[in-house]
Image: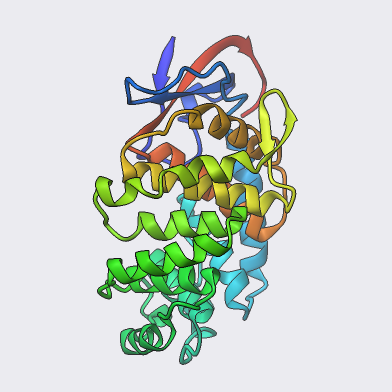
Length: 302
């Protein structure tokens, strides 16, 4: 019996009436030209997992953190789980200051976009000024990711051709997993045509080829869970924007998500946030459609 995931209730969880069964996920690729994968998802995020992540994010927010890094990841994770953050205005008041670099701009603008709180609002003029100062050929890829994401959050016009040129120069020097993932994430935000994105589609295979194999059905990155989750999220978002899954990608992507599934009890704030964000990207992708296969084996999980 096949049930489609309720994508409008929660990004990473199943409807209550089907929880209590052992789930497995398979990937449906909407393309007739994709190679057939023999690897399936080994499980899905359950209500118990959701409670675990909710507690991780709530714990950090209850401590009234002043660090934008902590606030952002706790709010990102909560948002993915459709959890309303209490006292958001009080939390945001600690961020109400001028932004002086791309990272600060990213955290502040992202928190504002996720919460809608006026207390979190960042100055568009300040970010525009930063973009004029920082959008140069030698900008580090992480700073470029922060900057473009900030501009996207605030609906600031982005010169896609200029950004693409910068990305090309960066890729010529560095093809590490995080660099390629930042690049894919940036490209997914530029609103480029499929033709314009096609020149970067091979980067999906390039980044997945660098993953290590734990078992026949799991891939991971040696730098850790955050890197693995960020890669997964970036790949899904790029593929969704591109509208096609390159040959050989499906099987590896399933294996990467299988690894994330086995690490769902993590308590690291950044890894937790991007793990649930990766599953959200998968669930909401118009190209990659997860479906739930109800097993005949029941569990007592609720």
